[in-house]
Image (cartoon, rainbow, N blue to C red):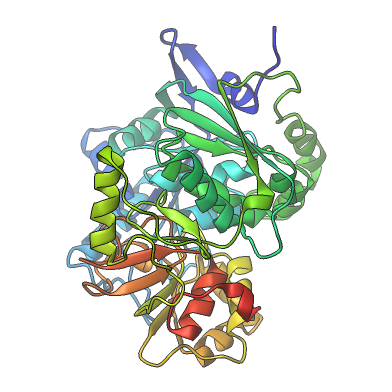
Length: 465
């Protein structure tokens, strides 16, 4: 009998009961909610006469529809946004769950604040009504996105009925070149295996290139597993992760720490574990990347031309992307003028991301007429960045410096870029009208976004380091 994968170990440890050969009732350790869906789930639960089973396991933040402009309150640009905020606040207080409200120094994007407060920990199961919950698998937890009705069930029972996914290991050999980032690696992988390449699978990232990534870089990589259609992603916890968690708010205390770490060290795939699929990626082939189309899989190296249209369904999709994005097959993206630059989101708005962007912006200014916005991923990230003077670097360069939130990662918050505007962005999705009706979005790393903002057109950041 072969050994167990990390996923096998997490699944088995949380399986309450097998319901059939493919499905089990899984115990849920943590439930994260935000104001776009959390208030709805808690209100529906209360109206059904049910209570939150264990309020201590539930954490709520304001992030999706909140205004990120300085001086914000409950006001929102989204017409019904204030109702989402107030309803969620009332429901959270009534249920007795932990609320990171506006003005709370712990508030921020749900997948940023959970790790920085140690709400997620290695070995836990964690769910949230948000597709990028897979971000938190970077810490060795089984974390996945759910719907609002599933959130109600989890709140009432601390369990969920889950169909067991298949397993996939993506081994990244070698080391990333100095100019390549975790975001570039994520785009490289989705461009290589496709936006449906991991459908129905839990992806475990492994290999020397993964071990070399910082904890925050691992979160960026796992964040974009949903762009592979994966159920979720995992990275086995190591010494970097243990050091990251020590002393954080909800981490084990001193008396429990050694026992916790001893358990976490067991959260690795056995040497003889078998995966349903194995994929190898050579880190040496990764370079600064950028998306050219309207899917993250439509991404290329910055030094490559826009690919030609092919025959068949893929060709029709590419032709539509060419038309929407206003790019021609065979043309370079470097030198393409941009109207705006956005640094933010659960993908690339942590302190390390802001430091990298600021290093490029130091002593430079954005191109005339270009709108540039930086939205920290959490109030804690914002405060730490300001303590280091990063906010002043962004402001001096011509960036707007915002409050924490999802902001223009998508325009459900009501704020958007304009029709036909070309935006370079650190976000994770570039679908049609994702950042505004008719807006054209190019996905890239914080370094590429910052350098392009200075140039006024898409550039290779290696010339600005």
